[in-house]
Structures are given as structure tokens and as C-alpha cells.
Amino acid sequence: MKKTESARFERTVLTSDRGSYVLSQNTRRSDGTEASERNSRRTIDADTFTFEDKSLASGRQVVFIFPLEPGQTWEYELETRPQNGFAAKRNARVSVRGWETVIVAAGTFRVLKVVHSTDYHPIDRLNFESGTEKLTLWYSPETKWFVKREWYHVHGGKPWDHSVDELTDFTVR
Image (cartoon, rainbow, N blue to C red):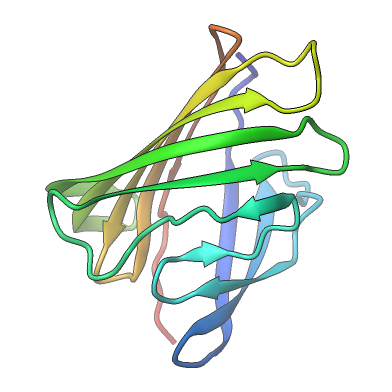
């Protein structure tokens, strides 16, 4: 596992229309340095929270399908081909587990817990091992975003990465 690090993300909606919006994100790490993607802009499909992703060769990650309801499930497949990474086929199953109350630094929120379980397999590298990822998002209708995110990554049968993000401040302007 890698070392623990914290960062502060500031997200701003730049433009919006009926089908999508453009989000700007600035990232500052706990050591005070800015992340390399410190001022990224991404277009998001408003119905599914699907981001544009240049590393995808096919498919798309369907983060949410609105309206979200407890018991709802869906699946998606995608193929990643990052410039400096390994090509992989990803199969994901998603389930909306139900309502919970979550306490984070920004406050207490009534949320829907959404769990993405993904298996991935190499496409074109013999030394690249298969793995799994589990992404849990706690979506708040109040913020129209997730207030907590937890990600587990197991690569080649061994724990590889684990991260938790929580909302620390929430302001509507």
C-alpha cells in the first residue's frame, strides 16, 4: 500500500445546460503543493455524472443514473488505453444500497450509498495482472455530489491502494 496523503479539492461549476456541465477542479496536497492536475476542466453528463475521459478506448463509466433509488442496479463495460499505462478491459456492477446518514467535516448529510464493484483484465501485456476495484460513493441530493468517496484497489491478489475523500466545506454561490 502507498503512504497516506490528504488533499483539498475545490470544484466549481463553470457552465451548465440541460444535458451537461463543465466543472473546474483545483487540487492542493496536504504538503502545500499543487497537484499536477491542479486546474482541470471536465465535462460531465448531468444525467449520469459521466466524465469525459481521454484514457478510454471504448465505453464509459456510469457513476450514477438519476433518479437514484435504493435497490437500483446497472452494469457497464469499458476499455482503458492510457498513454503511459496498461490497456485493460473493465467490467463493473453498481448497486444503490440505500439511505444513510453520513457525518463529514462539512456537516451531516442524508445520502444514498452507491457501490461500484469492478474487475479488470489486461488486454495487451503479458506481465500485467488482473485486479478488482471497489468504489463506494455517498451521494447527497442536497449538494448534488458525493460527500464521501472510498476506493479499494486489489492488484494481482494483493492490496494496492486505498483512499477516502470527504467533503470538508460546502458553499453555494
